[in-house]
Image 1 (cartoon, rainbow, N blue to C red):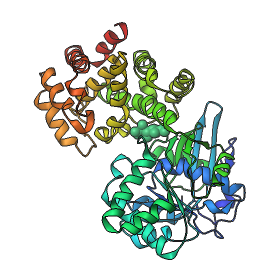
Image 2 (image 1 turned 180 degrees about the vertical axis):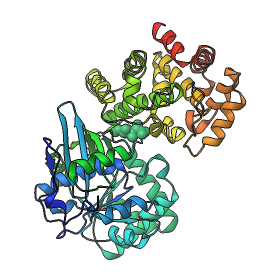
Image 3 (image 1 turned 135 degrees about the vertical axis):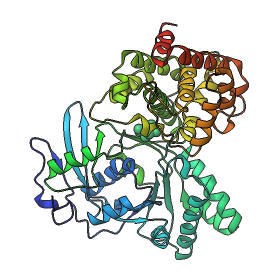
Image 4 (image 1 turned 180 degrees about the horizontal axis):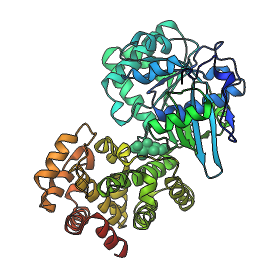
Length: 471
Ligand code: CS2
């Protein structure tokens, strides 16, 4: 296929047979970006960028994006070659529909075009910054980039800014604010003071399952559109964005609410339910699926024993500690979302960076349950499955690599003690950056983890799971 999706092919797209295709009905070239987004991955493009696209469809041109990839040039350049356009295939129970998203007006790469990012942060047209830089992105490099931008903005007198972290971290807005403020203070106290008054960091919870695109997905998009789309994505119908009402421009609360964003005074109940129930279950299934050789989340929940486990994990070990209203309905909706066969969400994708994700997802529930005398056996099984996962070989003797900054250390540790469950548990639970200081010393936690790791080693993960579900 010679032609690709871009501004000139947009109007003449063939469109999929019998499936609706939405496309931008607003003038894209006329708008300057009003939002700088850091972390141009799949998730952002099927979530916040689509919310901004909906606002632009309503005639509000302030939400166009400069999409910034932090390091990788591939996607930013592929997007630029398509004038920022890409298609999203939305698969829900009601069927399949397609949207060509037009809100990404420009793209660049922070590591290559840093000056462009700093200039955009200082531009009076820019009103928002959003971030999906993943758990490992919250370090000194990010702080330096943002604070350079804030300093330029202050010098340009370009006014206040909303800076919204959209990463799966508890208290994400406050964490980002702390990171930036500490960095600014070490450079210039007056700048830190300016940021206090002019930069608003709402906490937010974002949710939509967006698997990384595969060659099959790109082919489906090409078939549907009649032109090639190297930036195509697939996702589910469901999405949720709950954001704290803390904006540089207070009127943005109503603007966002008009397209379905929930603006609230306290995000924590939503954030915790999502992190512990959705992401917590995801990480458990990622480890179990990888060890059993089940490639996707829907393959996992299609197994009755895994489905029962995930239901019980949420109901017995996680939900008692949560404040989100109607967690039972949320759980049932999650199980239906996990079962969506069109998503083909790879367990190995979710297991990527396990050692940075798990701390956000499991230990808070373990601690809450221990404090209230509740159950932790499903969480213990998940922890044992992670330890088995760390060996880097599944139960069919297929090797896989741990895509994790601590992968080598974790795999070496898991292999060193492979025959000795108590030693494995001592070594792997002893990693304070994952489990904290208290849990590894609490026998109510270490004993069930050791027990289930022993059972997994003795009879295999599947039969051990049957024992757990009967227990
Ligand atoms: C997943 C998330 O890969 C992962 O770690 O758990 O990307 C998850 O799909 C999203 O947070 C859903 O909103």
